[in-house]
Amino acid sequence: MNSVSISSLVSTRARHPEAVAEAAARRERRPLLGESGRLMIVAADHPARGALSVGDDKLAMANRAELLERLTLALSRPGVDGVLATADILEDLLLLGALENKVVLGSMNRGGLAGSAFELDDRFTGHRAQDIERLRFDAGKLLLRIDYDDPGSLRTMESTARAVDDMAARGLPLFIEPFLSRRVEGKVKNDLGAEAVARSIAIASGLGGTSAYTWLKLPVTENPDDMAWVCETSTLPAVLLGGEVNGDQEGAYEKWRKALSLPTVRGLVVGRSLLYPADGDVSAAVDTAVGLL
Image (tube, rainbow, N blue to C red; front, side, top):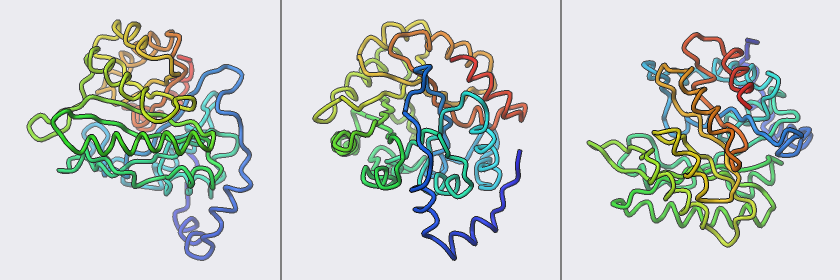
């Protein structure tokens, strides 16, 4: 991995904050979908929720230089289309020149901090539609967790609908990551049962005044064989959420491979399992995931 100079980034940010806008203005862009019609996106929007853990290491993502090094390596691999992250990380990558001819997804709602009492009142504290447009990024992403017992979920749903409208008005794609969730012993758990995932898809697909620019970012169901009928709940294009693999990398790859054959599924968005693989080989993990497409 090429080393990243934190001192250089800090110096640029302190002395020339306008460098971010200048780098965004000159960045070479590409269409959302290339010739293959598939997407391979690396995700790194976890830290803004205070979610820094990978496996047993609670602070694995706390070292920004190491995270940027892993991201720049992943983005350099053949077949990787782009990155999903919050403003701070995307702007670091802009300054490093790592986003040329890449698809850039801005993460929009990060207010539902992991483990907080207000986790399901997931306010939009990240990119706004106008920010994504101004920075010439290519799409947005938001997380929609719905707990039928938590009134905060309604605020998140309403904010999501308005974000769908704002993005569509600018002709910008928006990736919605929906879950039905509930608190178990005080912790928010996402229900990956087939019925719950199907319901979350139906709810997310109907938000806003148009679905023309809406994509879905979906988990693989508990029983991967259920994905075929679950994905028939909507005609919106979808990408698979990689999620944590809990040590079973090969098992995760097999689940992704099966789901990628479905007609609505157009790609993968994977984060920690590729950036911090158990064996430490980022290139091999990324290349294997690309091979699934």
